[in-house]
Image (tube, rainbow, N blue to C red; front, top):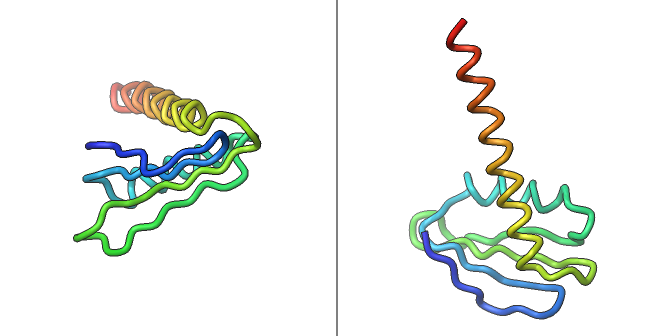
Length: 92
């Protein structure tokens, strides 16, 4: 995975996420939309096999880099929690 900030202002960012698809982008978009600082979170992918997704985030003034970092951290926490519960379930 490689990231490229296409453009960024104080409250908006376009971030190209090379090598990823709808799976990660849908989860990230959902985590972003759960954040009260986020006004818009969406992504565009022209064609799944020949283009990389571009994530767009607009905030209420918060730094979009911080908001994306927090959303990614939230996803990690959720995955860790799932893994813990899953390990318990399969040990039964």
